[in-house]
Length: 124
Image (cartoon, rainbow, N blue to C red; front, side, top):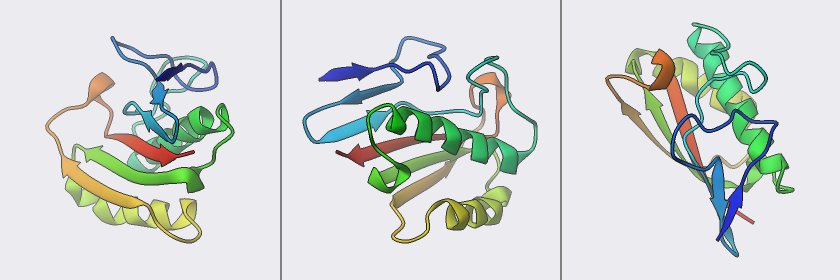
């Protein structure tokens, strides 16, 4: 396995790596809506948080020569499933064609009191 670390995505705020890759797969850790430069949440707005999470995922993938199109599966953790429709609208704007497989679960709390966290499994 190879540990992935890039300065263009938020630093790990715990005992984990930004991502880990094997010969054919890359697994990201859950990304939350942190600005990689400040380490702070980008906004309290759900939609802006989701977009920042995708920016962070994209930065990790780009550091390995990959794009969001390499994502096979996403797991989305949300503190309020009432935002599910907003999430789908953003997914439609992020993925222009074939969608990755996806699970969405409501959780009681996320790090830094953010509203969304997403992790990805990608092919290389």
